Length: 411
Image 1 (cartoon, rainbow, N blue to C red):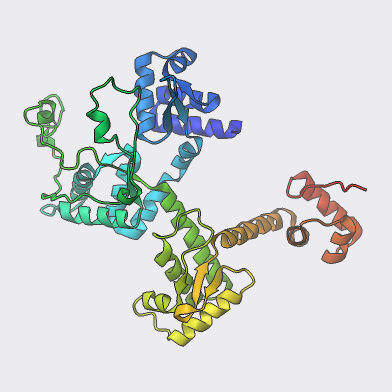
Image 2 (cartoon, helix red, strand yellow):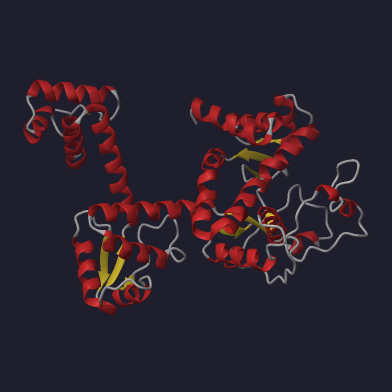
């Protein structure tokens, strides 16, 4: 990890969690996995503070732990997860775009708290929405709950791993750290909760002389504590699913720019049909028949089956190969070539960067090198039709900026 990335992680941790958590997090980023007492000794921090800092980092999925054979628990920072905190505003805005203000606040609460039960999220979001409404209007728990279910159905939120009941009931000595498990079938299974109620407004009259809200005071006593209906079932934002959505949006936009709006809508429909069944790292989407795609097109999108088949043929024959044909059953089976599409998008981005920095002629040379993989200087001059002196200068500029590399051939 570069020094610039470590510095950025340090700033993000300090901004979100304070100095102590930042010190522990950056120490783990620099040193790798370490046990609790070593962390406390190396950072000069008390064991109690280190424990609290690690609890915060684990709660937000920024640190993981592993039990070794000798029973020693080591903690390891997740650097990439820390850097993803930069994208929190984009995740929240995406949820707002797809699921309105309710979806926005659900994702925001999960990102701010790391892990929460569904009932806690629903009540908190209902209260926040009620405070923004006109007097006399309130947000119903059921409405927030329905949006939460939709987010789970589309995999934007997912269950957290949990401690199995068998481990808690084991009569032997407790393990040095709990073993967390998760069943893939249950990752997006929403518990059946009968959440009845409405959001409440926070008023100045709800606070006593000490400034503590009256609604919170009964929770301090065990007698008045209500049982949580979904206790032990915690949820978190599925960041990989958001990244998959960003990827799909980029592919749809690229198809629209290259062809037309109808083509992009067809590709969008194919991606939407495959978003749950296709893993985020899969090279292709699941094969879809022309008949299935036709039935799944948005309501009011008036194109005939024959026109759809013509568009699919054009997309499959396009040199960029965003869409591929994988069979002839069901009117033809089609897939989105995800890796090929991402490679084309990355190449287009690189070419635009080269063109902005060095000009169109350098971009032409850069494009040639990308296509041919290896070229001698004389071949670059001939293929790009650029004078020898200019070609040499341009190659040197890109070489000095590390956009291209020099490979010495063996005789």
